[in-house]
Amino acid sequence: MRRAWAITDKGYSQARACGLVGLAPRIYRYVSTRPDDVALRRRLKELALERKRFGYRRLHLLLKAIYVFLRRACGWRRRFGR
Image 1 (cartoon, helix red, strand yellow):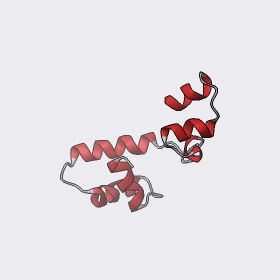
Image 2 (cartoon, rainbow, N blue to C red; image 1 turned 180 degrees about the horizontal axis):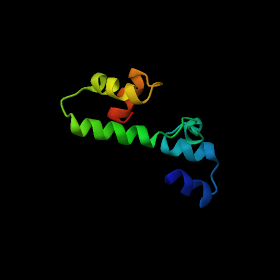
Image 3 (spheres, rainbow, N blue to C red; image 1 turned 45 degrees about the vertical axis):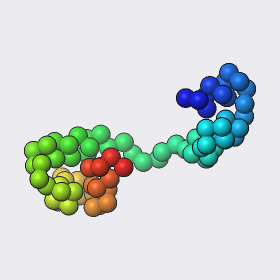
């Protein structure tokens, strides 16, 4: 990454390196706190491959039987990678 190169090799500050790339330093320092849901993603891919015509709402209903805590928006984000 350019920022890491600029910080380590060139000795630029983090703010300067992020400015060169056009990125806010707050985004560079961001660490996600969302739990890793590999099993949920794997199961969603399996269901989507089995039932290609199902949309995210119907896949959500199938997943909801397994994962009680799932919200519709969460299922949509998992399906479309956001």
